Length: 252
Image 1 (tube, rainbow, N blue to C red):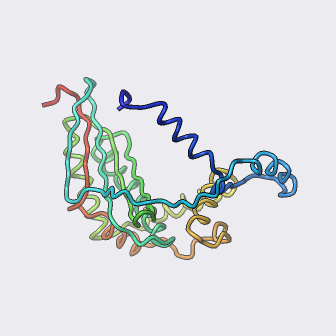
Image 2: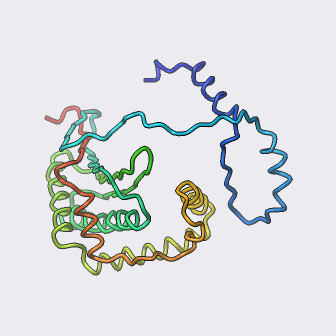
Image 3: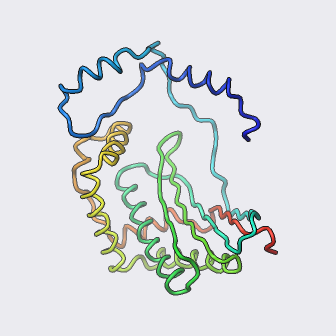
């Protein structure tokens, strides 16, 4: 990969992108008065080059694979392994669905931690992440990752699918929901004091045309068992995922 890089081509691309700031959007977060930063904006941003190009994103046709795909990469000699399971597909891109998707990720992480680490003693930690994008098509990505001894990797992967099936069939427990709701409440409190959180929210709301007043608003829906169960049924299709595992080279 690196031996095919062309520094001259990369630099030309960089110069082309930054030769026109006419369609840039600048966001400012922090403690300041708008009038106090106006002279700085005029001085440092007002003089940026502008050619008034009209540009937009384009769909280059990259799509996630379908069906169940399992790959094993054999590298290294240490007696440890890691696996990543990724579910993806179309999503109705709105705030309620994103809320349900992330709530499902939080519940699943709690359940998998209890099952894989505490009950089975198979891993030190489990990570579950959910995200979604609107362009070029509304799609979600749901990933589950954990490390383990090489000889236990497949066992824990099967247990992961069993845990997913249990949530799809019976939903989360009230104890799991309570933990997630409390974590969400604490996260909202912290994010209201963090510039990075404000920046991310401003960019998201502005890009999607959502009312900026919604950043401060409490969720209009409450995470409940039916919402999480339905999200699991929608987004965790065990007939459509990719599993990639890293194991030692000398592992048979």
